[in-house]
Length: 395
Length: 186
Image (cartoon, rainbow over all chains, first blue to last red; front, top):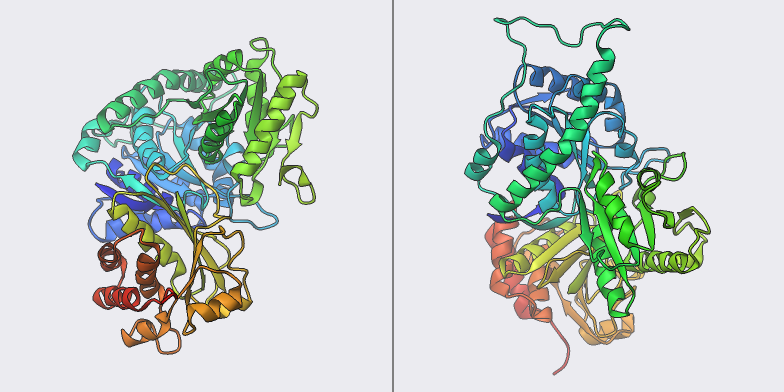
């Protein structure tokens, strides 16, 4: 069935089709319309789940953890400060190996208050042990939720997943979306089979105290292995999903005209969608540019980015957030995995923070700057803030 | 690709209009995207919303700066907002007003103007209140005629499927506006 859905309605549909048994959530703009839509599904009898209203996001995640521990699928959604408030329990969810799926609508962190898109909220949780998949349109929002349950629930993985969408640019934008048939989703996902659960007949303790000589370190090591193993599972599940539902997702990095590109823009989220139009326009002028849109930030697409860098003369890494380290996160990690593998200039473009609109014109200027760096062979300025007020170079 | 920008005031239904129009295009097999400029909306404050339509998938994920069509739901906005900002030279402006296209051409200093008295139509069909009529569905009927991009029957169907109440009254308001819109000329 094809319908016009906002990104948040698409998320609600993705959750509904995956049949979670417990939803626990707390409202926050721009996420709220996801849980409103789910509440309506449940109230109308279209979704068979228990909806738990809680007093904070910390409690929402705690409730999902407890429910998932009883052996059922759960779902929640949040943004920005809500995600930050969950921080402590995010670590619990992953450490307890509970395959919870959560939508995060990227929103800037205050102050000053901003409800618009910015990826700092999820980037700040990159070490939480959750898989992170970023989307570029509403179809991908819906499909990624279904795929995420299948990947996360695999007993060799058992790590929770954030399915991430840009605020307003997706969350409140209506697009045509193909809603898969319930039966097909049921067949694809199957019944949830917990690897372990709270069971009065087989009492067990979870998350007990471990002394330094105990297996704490081994637990963390197993999580690291699971994150690595997730790569092959993601590849498998995405391929299967493409086949069953007629989609064309790349598992880790969507490459657009990168094969012969001199300058490749590495980017996450909706900027990567607009950038494809810019690539077509610049190709007409004979400029060899391409886009690599990163879908999974966790696990990080190490091999894919190394391969892309091998054929390019420059990589421009676009971050829609900033971390106060050696450049922003996507840039710092991209550069880190290229060390020893590709000797090309890599430059960081920080842009679109707090929802500032990224137009084709700005993207074209960034590509032109990348081509200049490729020609010069050196990076003049490693971290470039694009479009600051008063800086006319990008407008 | 066609790009349409709506200017209205909070409470008039501009955002809903952008979605209903997208739905109508979608029902005719087009690719669409509709979104508000999401600010801190208050009743009466200026609101901007956007609709994109194309025959191929839409990858553009930014606001509309150079519209093909501008739809003004409230004539009092003309003195408060630059509704023609970035307007394509051969673009078209549709204004809800009792004035004629000629009068609006002079006021806006722009050649392609159509006008429709959507306010009177909305009041006639009891949409909203006498003092705050909801004109969004009527104006879409006028847009169907002015643009020729979508059939009035499809717009009426999209309205019937989308309106939370008074579905038929809203659809008829669109039809009235379709028939009464003034595109100037002879």
